[in-house]
Length: 325
Image 1 (cartoon, one colour):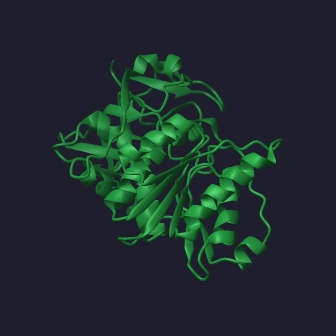
Image 2 (cartoon, rainbow, N blue to C red; image 1 turned 60 degrees about the vertical axis):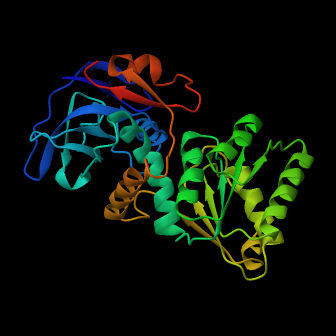
Image 3 (cartoon, rainbow, N blue to C red; image 1 turned 30 degrees about the horizontal axis):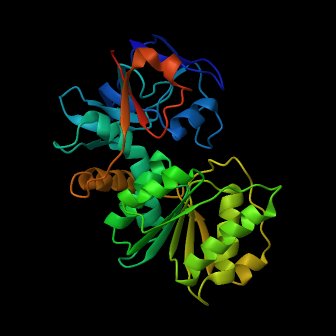
């Protein structure tokens, strides 16, 4: 079968022939119709993600959409290594499959599952967001963060604050449900850039913020926690949920930030949330797509173009590979 294949760490996948999978008892053999290119897929392929299999040669791809042998249309996740989602066929434990609503197309389902799960799990499983609360999304201009703004609103947030490094992109998030936006540019050589961001954050925290979803980590997350400690109302718990590290930076904090606030720091992802709960979160996202009018922009690409597309700059659109094309 045709597949996107790597033979070692930090490689761009090559389109080629790979042995077809044979499903064992308790597994589904799936004819793949769509598989999205996500940060999780790329980091697992490079070996940098904590859940990477590091089995070679292997087919890349963490999740996708396809049909089982008996014709059921399903979303699947975490195929059994060395098989992955970006191939004409894969094998997956039956418990790793969920049905797709009839009114949800394959490309949208493949594109929205991973970013939708990440914010749904963070808001529902970890933050326990309550209707009427205020949420702040740090790094809201990417596909995942933009979706988080929409999902937070759908789940009942009374106010959503969006931050981002791209001024034009973050200001456009009001069209996706953001009630306030804070663009920032942090430069260690210019202390005023950090002070300006911290001041804008303190204005929001002084009014009360209940949940922070962080996709960036690094200096921006550090500044948010410091602002929360300085300006958050006394005793008001702030649940800070760490989801991604797109900044590729570390955080340096004084313990006083936590002693002087009711800040609660926790992560959200594979292992910090039970697998069965993650699948339930994806179901929740799928069922919300049309009622909540959730938007995710996609580019459908034949899998044969994986080498050209893997590292291409596609803006904030989600690339979805179509095996067999």
